[in-house]
Image (cartoon, rainbow, N blue to C red):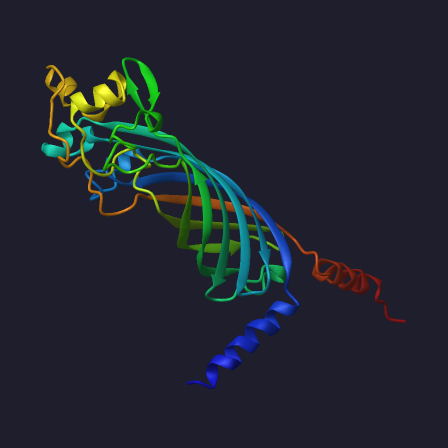
Length: 289
């Protein structure tokens, strides 16, 4: 078995030498998230799926390996109103945020992929890489969208509380897909990408409450009103809970997903297309006496 690995590596490298080309394309589909406002990180609500779109450039090093640079946009949302009746529905919190993402991803074609002359026009693939994204959670309150991060709704910055969270973060994208060559130039595909983030605040919810009066004094009326919205649900005055009462799960970071269709165009910049054209001209120019 140990002798097969070097042969496999040599095969991939040999294939790569004559098959490098650039590809550009677009992605369109949907996105969703799993976090504290999706039933306290336990469920993805398909009804909260939002549009996702993007552009990408893919450099195909060979038939098996590609590098992809992508820019994506989507929005994410969640609400306790989706949860079953219980403590997390009673929080009455909701959010939405735009996501802008740039990523660098490596792909591995499991079955070999080469659209030139449709020699290997289909392959499943897996991918992984690094992404940088921005977010800015907002909630609707009295007919307006209010940005939540500046309000420190969990008492960020107070003694014994976490520091304010950053709205620019890194994530690890990974997933799988299928690609198919319609002809030498055009490819279509479908892929599911998972973005594992390093923040639990995409939805502005993570740890524990700070009491209403403490937030009112230190962070202001709007922060106190939006940290716990049970009173709105009950039609009563603000509900006061002690500092340290659970507000979010606080155990796992938020994750978001993009499922999309792709279409892309190949630029054969290594002479393959030129060789093909010369071959065709040669065939047309052949004649017998």
